[in-house]
Every structure is written in structure tokens, then in C-alpha cells.
Image 1 (cartoon, rainbow, N blue to C red):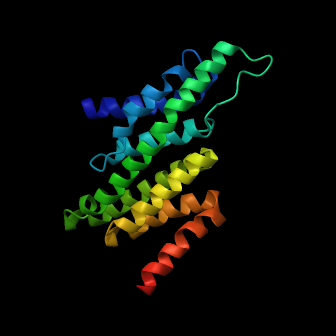
Image 2: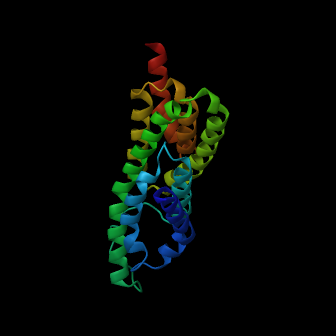
Amino acid sequence: TEVHQTSSALEALVAVARPMLRDLEQGAANLPNVMTLTLSGIDTNDTSKTWSTLRFYTSLLSGLPLIPITEAAPPGCDPVQHEVARQVTDMLLDWSLRFLDQCFTFIINQDSQSHTEASKENKADSESRTSEYFFQAALEVFFMQLGGDLFTSAMNKVANFCFTNLLVQQQRQLGVLVTALTAVEPQRVARKLLPLCFRILLE
């Protein structure tokens, strides 16, 4: 079926994620399109597809710093490959914020999807915990690879999401998100989030 074909394609991407980075002209040049097309794989209605997508991102991002390249090609570096890398990195910066948006949508919808039928509660809880595991791994690598300015943008985006949405039933998922962010820059995240928490408690 089409669903199984999509999952199989995503699993294949997991296997070739790292080799793609070693071939700038053929592999890395196609990364922006591949990563944009796979964003829809983070889907509350299809946990298997979501897990495959997150595994792909975890494998790929572990070798892909999301930092803009602004300097000219250093001596000894092929200027053509350097330009390809610069263009790829620039396009992936936009993907980074879209990836967070997709994660936010998943978090918002996950609870209502998981508890639609009481008879499936145990299975839904098990799937939810597995999703949390894959999200934790993907998000930690994602935040770790962000450059300074992009990390700040992501941190602000997470803070805005946490404090402008009523997510009473999604506390566990929010914990995964904030834990992954805090693991990378604990002091910066604490300086950002704690004053917001105190302000809400004192209102």
C-alpha cells in the first residue's frame, strides 16, 4: 500500500543518510528537498511513519551542523563544493524552524489521537512513550547542531509555544521538548524560561 511504501522509503533514507553527506554534489545538494518532503512524515495518524522520519533526522543531523557558511572557501577547498555546501546550509535554516512547527503540531494533536478509544489506551500509551523516545533523540541532536543565532530563534519559538498554548494533557510531551532544549544550553534556556514561569505564577 501507499502507506507501507512511504514507511519503506523513509527506512531506506535512514540507511543512506550519512553517505548522502559525503557526496556534496549528488547527495547533499538534494538534502533540502528531501528534508522538506519528509516533514509530513511527522504525523499523529501514523506512528510508524513518524518514528521512521525521526530516525532519519537523528541519523542525518548527527553529521550536519545547521550553521550558515558566510566565509569564502578556505585554501585547498574546492570552491564549487564550498558553494554547494553554503547553499544547502542556507536552505536548511528555513527547514529548521519548519521542523519545530511540525513537532508542535504533533504535540498538540497527539493526546486527542491517543485517547480516542478507551479500549486502546494501553497501546496508545505505549506508542506515545515510543514517540517520546524518538523525539527526544531527534530533538537533542537538532538543538545541538544549531548555530548561535538559530538556536536563539529556536529557543524563543519553543518558549512562545509553551506559554501561549493551553496544553494541560500534553505535559509529558512538553517535558521532552524542553528537556532536549535544556540539555544543549542549560543556562541560556533557564534564563529564558524561568522568568516566564515566575511571572505566570505571580499573576
